[in-house]
Image 1: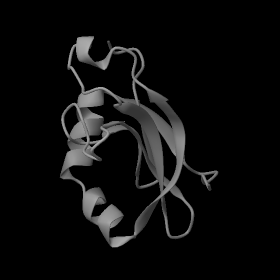
Image 2 (image 1 turned 45 degrees about the vertical axis):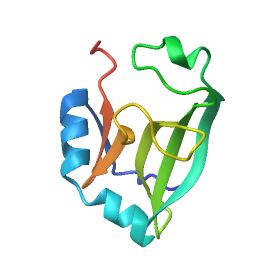
Image 3 (image 1 turned 60 degrees about the horizontal axis):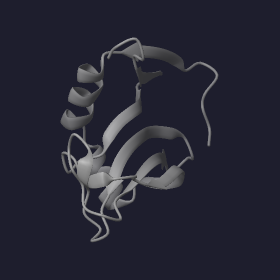
Image 4 (image 1 turned 180 degrees about the vertical axis):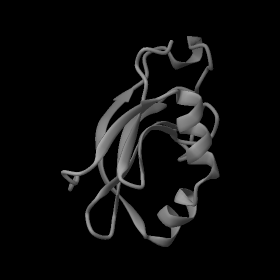
Length: 113
């Protein structure tokens, strides 16, 4: 995984990060192979998934995923809920936590609640 030395890390509101992600072409890039999953950073079964604020079926897994471009540059890191049937839970979309935008790496501003 390559992160350029001239990359500027910028904390942005989660609403801005999600808006930019949703307006981007990243979904098509993942399907076409322009972006590839690098690794599952973290994966775990949800405890008591039925009792969560947004209930999920039994055997749902939480995953943190990284996606790289063809040069091995980190473009995106997401959080997602993978159900046993292979579908994504919660909103049905990955939730971006880090996203490369030009020479910036946008990250979720942790000061937000």
